[in-house]
Image (cartoon, rainbow, N blue to C red; front, side, top):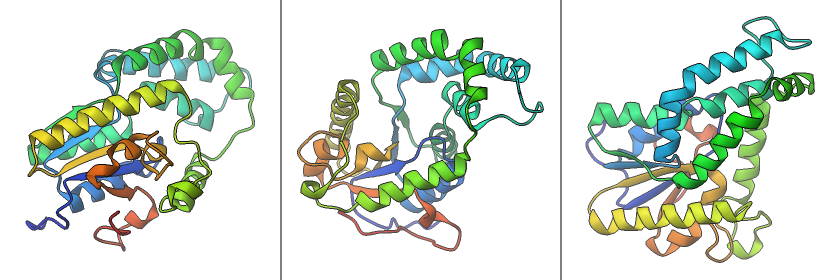
Length: 249
């Protein structure tokens, strides 16, 4: 790993598509290239604790119910919908990649999402989405290729990534709860930048939070005055494309 860091930008925002099957390796390469001093993540403290306590138990429950449902697949084959349900109760690749890098390089990792919203969503997931009836419904849906769905999301992201905000046709946030989360995370990041002005801070989030939206509606809009660099976690991070892709904002 090079000792010289590739850019002087204090804050770097990495936009990812959640559940990307190749996301772990892509993010490992981004972390190695940026070499952050501090890593933050779109995951709440509650969400981390919930998965630590419940991930294994809930994963076994989902697999068991999926394999007993009507028209279920062989034991090692699950529909994309059920795979996404599994991903919702397991640690996301963003956390796994960031945790490994943070431990190896001895840098802090902070989960800075809003716990009260995470608590509400995870309780609803546990009470409603993980029922035998819902899993049977998911198994009855036409199957989709998860990788194809993820690639379509990245294409959509790339189409709007560098567009001026006044031309953007993508809503910056999908609901008031997302707006609350972005305001909360932007305050945490702003405080870290003020406290550690010489440190490289890298934040990992869903790509929608990092687009150049009109006004100050999403995370990037709330932090635009800090001139953060944005990196889209797409196919540019393959092994034959070393270094940082795209241009800083």
